[in-house]
Image 1: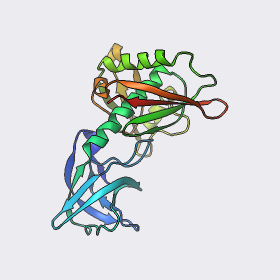
Image 2: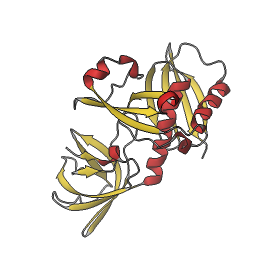
Image 3: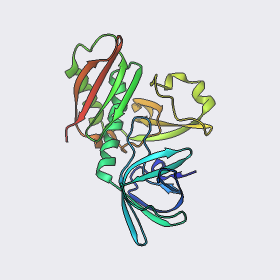
Image 4: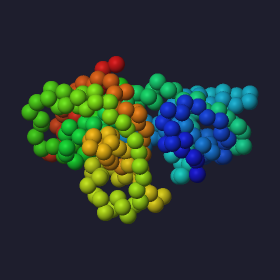
Length: 238
């Protein structure tokens, strides 16, 4: 199983590890990874992989069972299993994913409705809500969202068991995506502390350390997607 270093430290930008195997399609499976693999609406990380006598761009990062596989640029000859390699993250892209991801958690606070889907990008993100009617005042939602961001609330994580999650179904906001399970425990992402806590939900993705790091956002289109679903987009201002 690949050790997910990004989970212990989302700000780690590089690591040295070893290739454990190659996938049938040429993906490079590593023993430890600072690269986040595609999942939960968050794209896989990109960057570079270097080793003695070689270098290749990493275009994507994906799960391969319990492992993490790096997808190299077309035509790159992958390093052999056992090779020591250095992974260097495209930090600017990842950090923007972190900002958008945390902003989407706050969007689910200002729109307290069940979430039916979502996606994260480097400039914008969106959540789909079980929302029969469109909000009356989009600007009021935007102001509320930016007010939460401006409070510079701490973002932290905690772990509970699968059984504890089953006993607290209200923690799960997403209707279409199940929380990351299978190892006996589930990671929770908390925004705010104590009386200042505004959100707590299962999530396996990467986040900024405080909400102030997100920066100002705008709410874009609110689109009807089915009888009761509406898609709400948000964009980073810078």
